Length: 111
Image (tube, rainbow, N blue to C red):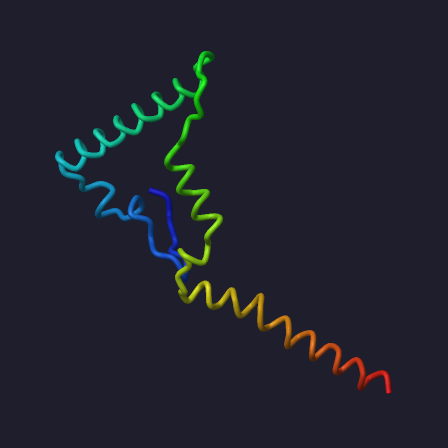
């Protein structure tokens, strides 16, 4: 396995946890294979509908519909975390103080 270092603001992905990655029981492997098979069936069904030259109706992808809804209504799904608070401060508050400092020192220097 590659040498993976954890990021300070993120947790280690489950797929990179050695205890979960290598020590899978037979039931867990079988369940993962069943889920992969189901995903493959759904993907094939969607591609068959999409590439049907005789279709007349609109094909709706539920995952795409959920994604578009989440993109158009971001504040309903926003959750304040340390990372979002830090980014909000860096891009919202800090530039105001920097701009104030630059303009204030520029006036003093011009006199």
